[in-house]
Length: 185
Ligand SMILES: CC(C)(COP(=O)(O)OP(=O)(O)OC[C@H]1O[C@@H](n2cnc3c(N)ncnc32)[C@H](O)[C@@H]1OP(=O)(O)O)[C@@H](O)C(=O)NCCC(=O)NCCS
Image (tube, rainbow, N blue to C red; front, side, top):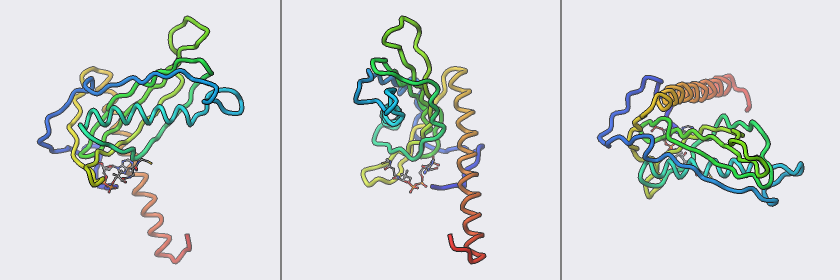
């Protein structure tokens, strides 16, 4: 991963931009007994798989080809999901770099036994890298935020990008310093 970029990075590309709405996707799934943990509620890993699937569909649609998950962060589980609940996983591209995209995901559950509006049960941010046939990163179209909410998400994604790069750089420097001091691991 390159960690030279900053939050003010301007990505130069000849690829025409694509609006957020062009790739926004919702994946819906009814939870069954095979999705549960020992407590009888839905296993977090089942939700994470749906999150990765929905985000991957968005990344593929936005970039016009294959894209791989580079990272998943800030996966939050806000409320338990139960067997029978209809889960909706809503994903959109929040931000684009040169070859990577941040996809924001919201997880909502419609309770099987309530006629109430869907409850938000989770959220996550994933970074996908678009790749070519050899698995090498390839450029992506810049995302064009369309609404005030899209623009807020774009700005927040830039903050997360800056923090990811800074954390990675700080850890690498610490390890280099420890190695220079002759410390083992
Ligand atoms: C993701 C991957 C393609 C990056 O390859 P790389 O040789 O490190 O390439 P780069 O350093 O040029 O990174 C490519 C882009 O991804 C971003 N990126 C790479 N690793 C990242 C990470 N851990 N977190 C966030 N972004 C990351 C880079 O910032 C860069 O973005 P930019 O071009 O928009 O600035 C490579 O690490 C890979 O194939 N990983 C496995 C992915 C996979 O199999 N996922 C499924 C899990 S089973």
